[in-house]
Length: 452
Ligand SMILES: [Mn+2]
Image (cartoon, rainbow, N blue to C red; front, side, top):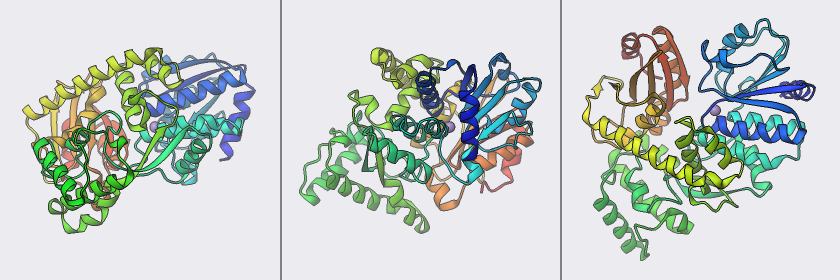
């Protein structure tokens, strides 16, 4: 990417730099990489976290730096950035991977985005490529990019691919990350196996939320294969051949619950890879999916510095992070209880709920987790709407199978629909978000489209 070279030259020739980053796992890992980079080149730099770039929030960005770097956002907000910086004499570097709104017209904006080359990686991946442009030996930073990619669920169908795979190889080569063939269950290091199975909701079977069915399932497997899996063991402690047996049996179990033409996509949902940090001793941080949860448990509630400390290896705040995690889980549990009590409005092509009882910062997570609830139709996208000071926050999710087998694309749907409803939005096929002024116009619009 030619833009990386330009970005590097501008960065190295700046007297002082401001780095502005997003606040999810990918944003935090972007920040960690850029923080290490400025330390290594000894650059006078200040940092700022922003929840998102809007006409309002961008006012917080000072203009008295030679260079401003935006990481893990910016590509979707080029006109806001252009407008705000129109009489600015310095340079702007955007290191992002989100959908590109338009190409910048001023040449003081260096826009680095893998989509320009039909490639895909996360924001931290772009920051990592930027770091490597400065010094190709800095492969110790690759682990952050891999964590960013996992945080952004770029391993959607079981493993990291393309540019992410290239970065993953650096992280393996530097001795930081180990890749395993693994079951796609959450909580490999911190949950008993039966709990991981309890919440596995890619396919709704009789195992979902049903511990006694899960125990009989495991007992049945033990008998059939003459093995001895304890339902309370952790997935991470099991050898691969046992995981394979469990996965095969889980697959067979699913066959009764899905249409014939979905079956071919099943293996990808059950078998894939896991990524773990080799030298990490804290069990919550060992597996990258769980590490990402820990970061969210801090940053969603604006505790950015606990997450950042943990990321850069300063473990003094581990206890604080665990407290945050506990509180986060509590909020999620309360949110899910609430979802069970309210009306879910079912339309032909989707279902939705509207509530003022769920904070917008965790709405998306709650919508995802709702697929483990009986009152949610697991074969339709689910949309959550909540009111904020600026209008309505909308989060949409759907099971991965719907994207694979039915080609559902929520990112596209929300981008179009939010425009119709006087707002903005977008995201991924299986997960997207929007802010709109008029939630009724939004719902009316999506009633009549097919989400593909
Ligand atoms: Mn990102």
